[in-house]
Length: 348
Image (tube, rainbow, N blue to C red):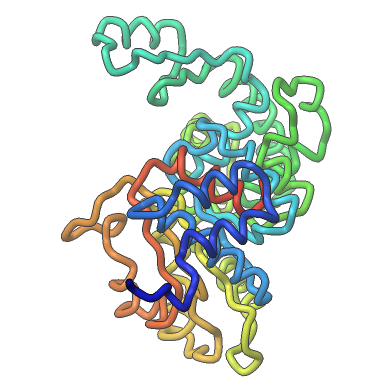
């Protein structure tokens, strides 16, 4: 007869941890034991440990997470102090606001895989912009927000002031004029939650967004005189460098580093992770710690010549992560995985 193991099995440890949490967490602990499922719970536990040690967490959003309504769980993460900064694409910044203002006009197309070119053209004629299985209504969402933010752009332009894209969004929300038009519970909007906490947001490549295109059009037609009225790009990187330097405690103080929770790939992830090697290698600030935690949730499979599909260890050679940094990569659909990780962290 073989002897009983001296240490508890992973599933026993996880089930013990989940007893203090809700039914979703208990389900995860019971069933998520191997492969991507096991990494899901390992990454959630490490995220939890990082925060308990005094660390902060930067969350990056690529893809169409706002249209997928990740805000239902992300907003609560922000309110509970489990997210300290966000890097997102321009699309995610604006699409959370679109959903807040025009949710009742959205249309779901569950048979989107079978749409013909003629059916797609019919959606275009109705000004319904499709994102996988969800159509965003141009007039009720995009044009309504354009009218509101254009007034802010022009006012800043005439006053010779400049603001970041997310700051213009914060101005709209704080002004209160849009509140009567909300079509979802504002507690399900991650942008509202971020605004309430004045959360730092960084939006690389904002020009590649609907509002970015609209801003360019107004510059071309002359209603906005200064193309730099909206601050972007390098200025966002300098702001990120300042924020990271403040948020990450010097190595001499021990714990307190910043973690990196990456949803999807692309510029939302590639842009901010480079701030650490820039601080170390280009500015000589070697006392600033490396990222203290790393997790990427993406359906980009590991492949050669891919940034989003690179294994986390590759980031060691670039001076982004340490050999000892907890690293996780979950090759799965972020719309399924991330709310479950957040549920664990929220004790649901």
